[in-house]
Length: 215
Ligand code: DX5
Ligand code: ZN
Image (cartoon, rainbow, N blue to C red; front, side):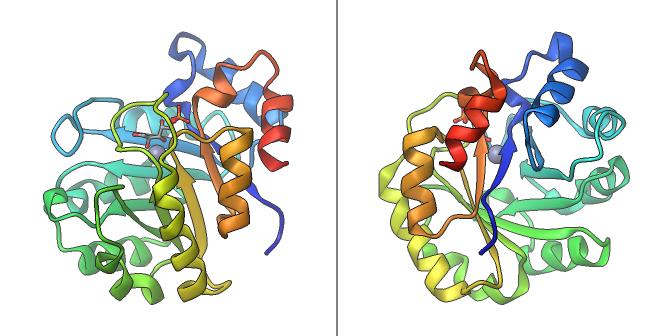
């Protein structure tokens, strides 16, 4: 696999200076911008929607990696496509209330990269039938909803399993509690995309923080 992709999650950015934050993180070497979309139903938090993604689209040429922690993702996919998403990742859990196969195809047909994800409590078996239909598997290393939570080391087995089943054909992304130390474990286990919120946006020096994640 080529070099590790770092995707800062703007959930941890200072929204009063979002334009500045995006420019700074881009100059610091970010590869993608990760947008965490929360609806207050699938997860116990509300973040932002397509209007903010559209605004971010106008601030950077970097790929926008949109993570939908929402119910009925199929209903909202077209709006995130229109807003300029490059990849769209949806949840596999029944609580996400959509037909997973159909939504993956909908994302594909819209010309975006296709991502699927699972919560720490969710059995890996749920994603297995879809591995040949996706470009990226996101292994959640915290229960989604909030930034700043500790990394769940017990999720590393899923990263290894995904890499052994998916080979080099799919990106394997980890999200939650990623810092220099947990990034190393994740990369060694087969992850090649790192999402990081607090360890980048709460750092004084974004370039240093991103460099430390790459190891
Ligand atoms: C969790 C989100 C993550 C989160 C990561 O619900 O999907 O992207 O913002 O934040 P940190 O890096 O602070 O754990
Ligand atoms: Zn995320």
